[in-house]
Image 1: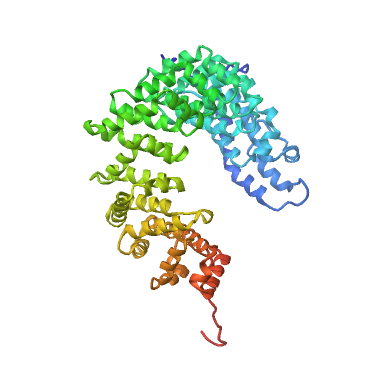
Image 2: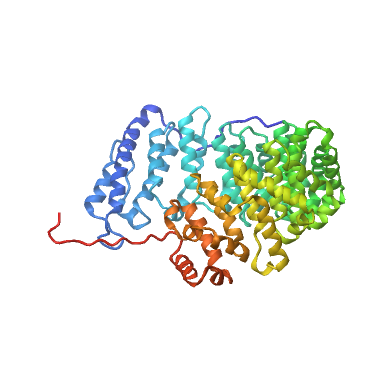
Length: 588
């Protein structure tokens, strides 16, 4: 059960003044706010001497501080000791601590702090008394809370994480239970600073109550708060002491209690567990011993199709690590996923989880060995080919993405080549979709084609070059013209995706011959006027670079065109040819 929220209160030895007594100070604060523009203008003026300001300027800055009962600042001393604006900020901070409702002072302090460099605030860190600001954060005064959060965000940056952890731990703890999400986010940002500091993180590990409140933030409604809490706990777990604090104490019970809030929160906890498990085999061992990984895998292979769809994303993240894949194989999880794919044909709801399961195997293949995965789990390859023939654009998109992943290395290309004419038919369907599908699916098809056809120079054997040339001819009757037509469409993402296809094949001799023999193609590559935005200019430049750096380009394109490519390359992607004009004397 989530602890009840309570507003932050911090004791203050000084007695608050009445609202009537604070009115003269409020007027003075308003005057001070009006003088801030003057202060900025003064500081922006050229220096008259080292560390000096004009007497008139100092007098102008001092006027705003004169009034009934207003504390005066020695501006000469302030200018010499760290800056006028920093002195103003400290003066206002002291006034805030003496007033009951210091809205005017808070507004002025917020404005002043925008002009104070962090370096100056750090010099004054010993003078920063933040307790009164924390005490003013109250759920019943929205503007006051907003101002205090904004001010604290700035001032806390001037304090070392160790200082924050040791001296403001009570305020941090109360901040995590505050009903205002902005206060929680402010507090968690400081927690993250602390956990990222090797000297300060110990302070949090020794504060069980603060850790508990961080865990309960995962169960909040605000996603930003939950994400910040997950990041902090994930960071804490990077050390042995952090793992012990999370999994060998009552904190584990708190984590399991938070999971019971609802399905969304349960998946957030799974996300945290997967992040921790991915760090090292030791971290995974802590998580499996807790029982939470086992619970995740049980939900993955359960009967709820929507739960399957959610859990497979997290299990895929775990499979990105070698120790994670080893664990999944040892527990038989990969075999279970394969069996679920086998039975998907008889499941009317398989469309909910099948895309995620196929993507899982695609990533598994490219991270391990495409040949071994495809041979051991042939149902995976079979399902991908079936999905390309689907009428559902979602299924086609997943299949195309998976083919692109699988064919991104030479071993994967060879696995696909072994399927023979079936893969040639698949390429024809991809070419058709690249021309006729929705814009999103067109881009996915083009990116898959780029992945399939790219061959690094050191891997360009005669057999592989013949294979890619054969594949290219399977895409359509005139593939080069197809992609050139797509690149001329007035859609930036399509244009760049088509250029990426040209770049992928640009270092292969057969493709260079096609380009050279295609009417107007060389001129199209050299023409800078076609590209009007940065993304297009960058994509065109990558194409030119791939051509110019090829060992066979001079022979195929000819030396004049090769020199033009080298010139384009040396001029850079954003070169604009200067236009010369002639001035005629007496002309209007």
